[in-house]
Amino acid sequence: MATSVEMGIVATGTSFGEQRGVAETAGAYVPDPEVVGALGYRTYHRVADGDTATDLAAEAAREALANADLDIVDIDLIVVGHSDVPEYLGWDSSAAVARALGAYGTPTVLCTQVCAAWSVALDHAAGAMALSADTGTVLVVLVNAASEAHTNRMDFNGAIASDGAVAAVLRRGHPRLRRLSSAHFTNPEYADFFRIEFGGSAAPVPPAGRDNLHADPMVGIFRHFDRDPGRFQAFMKEISGRIADVVDQALSRAGKDRTQLARLIYLNDNQQAIREAADAVGLPIERTNAELARELGHMGAADQLICLRRHIEDGEVAPGDLVALVGVAAPGMHWFCTLIEV
Amino acid sequence: MSAQPHPAPPTAPAVSEDDIAAFVVERFLPGVDAAELDAEYDLLATAVIDSLGVLRIAEWLADRYRIVVPDTELTSRNFRSVGAIRSTAERAAAGEGHV
Image 1: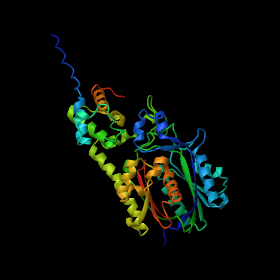
Image 2: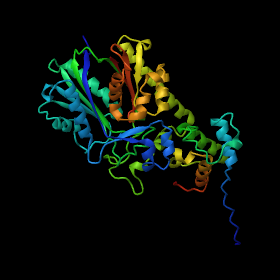
Image 3: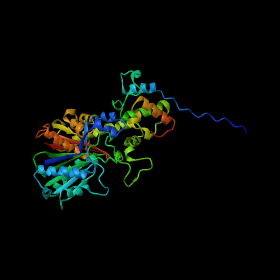
Image 4: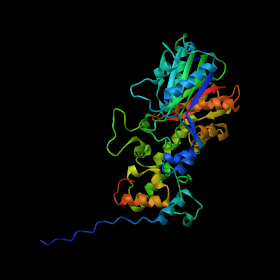
């Protein structure tokens, strides 16, 4: 029995917040902007005050639909991945995006596994096509708009959080930008890492003198490893090792191997982290999204598909090239890879 | 009953910047002369130390001076220079909790 369907990306659309310089603005977020500068980012994007993740997502989706020469009524399923704090708790931003697009009756799904949401969203689209012959065209929308009330975008787990969205129209049997396979590994031992401490049902309100913006997530991670440098170092090695594992697993599922890999698109992490990911897979950093990451910042679940689009526009990948979209997501933690044949 | 004199409270060990610099150089800057490491040289912005480096320095402070830096003080900013490491260690030795 076939376990997957062939699907490809027909068209994409993007939208971004205002582009800002790191050097010019980091001092407004942190007391030591030179440390932020060492991460390697030049610019990032910040959504205008009053604009929302839903606005960004809908704008990207409209562009993708226009580029595909489709109307919203042509879409069989809308899958939204939202990687930061939503506008409201107990709310479904996939329905909000569908409403903004003028959809009515089209099923929507919301993927909330932070920076992993893009991979989950693509898998869900493929799964929906496999389950129902009526599902032939899917709109996947991935958005990140950092809530500056909850996190410091300049002190975001070694990255600079950035606001942007990407949308992709996927069609069964489309011969370009084909999703070949995916792989996903979760280590639930790290389920509490990098969580936003206050505002959920366990701790709705921070105790006196504490708040999310000043809660350093590394403190909890150090505690988890009993402050043992050896255990922490093993964790760092696990991050790289599992990147290689999911890439190899996805390649194997597609009947490919690493020698056929043209490019690695990792999350838009800091330069050192991208270099380590490239080393883990055995590709030079020049065949990654490292330069785009400097310009874009970390747009959560939107990173990989935005970079794929940019690499195509810039002529850095060509039809037939095999590209590994790869990410590590926390909380989770999750490692995941989706293989795309351009 | 005659009053016995109270024993003197234990004094916090003096933390030497030269000592810290020697450890930092040995561990993270091989080939550099410890005397050349300025106490305010930014170890974070120059990527000399990272999160793992913070743990290694905290472990060394515990071994060398019996100073346990509280979990909440294990932030990279508290270890960004030799001078910052000394201040962090002295606060911990004095039992002060927060930056």
